[in-house]
Length: 187
Image 1 (tube, one colour):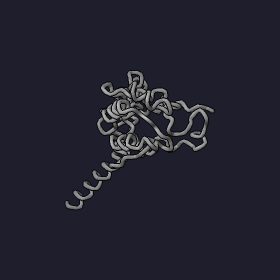
Image 2 (image 1 turned 45 degrees about the vertical axis):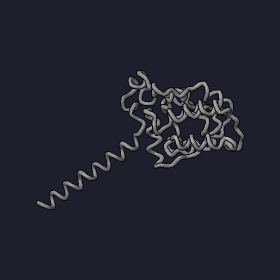
Image 3 (image 1 turned 60 degrees about the vertical axis):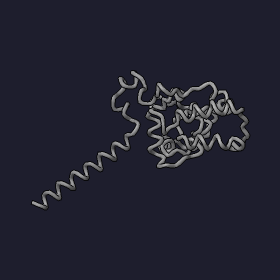
Image 4 (image 1 turned 90 degrees about the horizontal axis):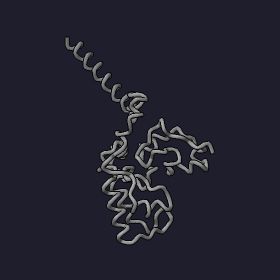
């Protein structure tokens, strides 16, 4: 009898581990399981209506040099570190007035991955394990989602590297990074 209970326990444990592994592999593919109908009805699992990715002060201050990244792609600590090092912002000096800096800071911290209700923010946070990366391209979830892209694809002029989200994700400003909608520029 004890042997049967042990075997049953091991079978249930193996099934549980296998189920978790499959679910982890399918992370972010819940729309694919729902089919085209789910995709056509919107992207509520990505979008966070209470925290839009767009903000005039942020776009004016940061969007002039690069895509104004959705705040939900990094945790508050990362954004705090970025704002604290504007004197050397990845090799460039960024000058913002105190008013501009406060507006940008407020937007980034209010909508960061660790406080956002957007699914993309939750996925980013699950992948970080407490880390506060300096760059969006250092987020493990983002690296994992792009691991199959060859370096020559990322080097294309129309792509401009992994950091240029909007080159392939036309819905990025709405937090829509759905695989099915990604369009990789040919050149």
